[in-house]
Length: 131
Image 1 (tube, rainbow, N blue to C red):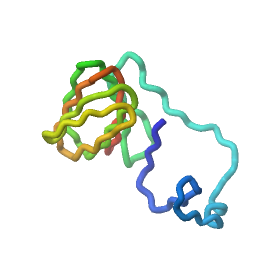
Image 2: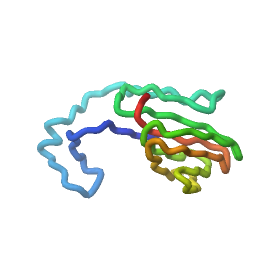
Image 3: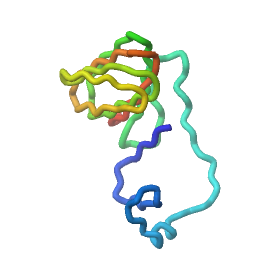
Image 4: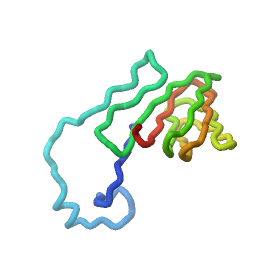
């Protein structure tokens, strides 16, 4: 699972970290009503790239499936975060090479040309500004 949050200054901590929790304020905002979660569809099996539909105007979420030795080149149209969900890859961005495996990420600056090469079959997620 991936959680992306839009920019906000109204976050109230709930105790999942050792940071201060304002319990009285937290209890004022909690709604314990049962809801049906809205799940996004999974990336279709027959394509390599997919843009997930989100209600957020702050970011877009893209998925890229790759095979071993498969190459992809792109130019960052905004700053982006690439997160390896499965497998491993090499990425060259701004003349620096990074070898990433499942659970690792890299920040890519705006206007940077980057090249991805799959080291083993997998997929990555890219969070960036929407077009």
